[in-house]
Length: 179
Image (cartoon, rainbow, N blue to C red):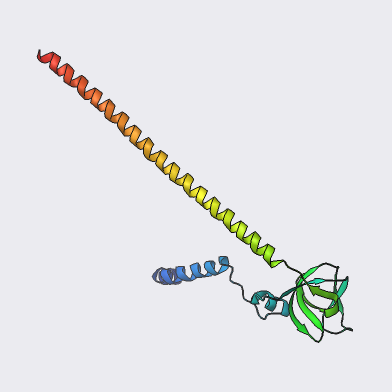
């Protein structure tokens, strides 16, 4: 019995420290902290936020695991597939596709023709629409606020009319009793 009461006394003396440690363990469990032993080539590309050149396959092609004609085929990529290249090596484009880093011969891809003027116009139009929407929303909020103010003014006026009526009725009764 003496050992149990000593342990209980120890835990009661150090309950703040123990509570903090337990809370720290739970916080680590639920915050989604992830530890990676090492980055593979695929996760390294994902984690860098790399920006590359947009290309489109010009033919049905095979993606290889190395920039060599004899390398193993790891993916079949159909004609017209958009790819974001992340590098170029010995006549091969390196890219990241479906979770894998692969290589395609330069002759199998072409630059994606992007109409930047059309994209700029679309972006400008989208921003104008967004701006118009925000202005409309602000006007609605302002009108709602004014409506609420007028409701309050009307309620106060009705209450004041009621009070004036009650006071004048009481004064009239008071005057009738004095006469």
